[in-house]
Amino acid sequence: RAQYSMICAPDGGIIDDLIVYRTGPEQWLVVPNASNAATVAASIAERLAGFDATLTDATLTTSLVAIQGP
Image 1 (cartoon, rainbow, N blue to C red):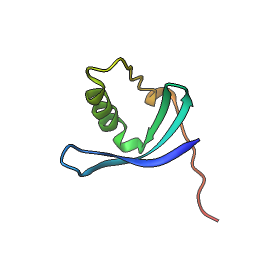
Image 2: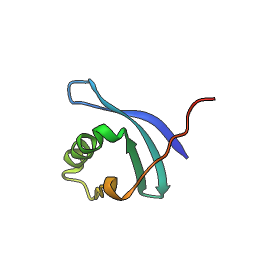
Image 3: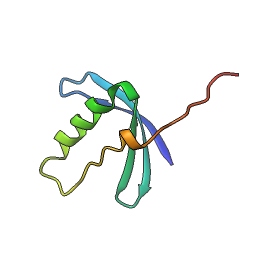
């Protein structure tokens, strides 16, 4: 299952749109646009501070091919 969503900046602006997949009971895969992957990872890591959670950035070991058009 997946959800198309966005990640917002503290001022309410949009950092990027995302696709979030639930891959386990307490595990998610967040897919931002490739050009914003580092920005999104940094924002998520900042928001995780103080929580018992871990961010693993798999950007350099993961790929996606999106076929579009007729």
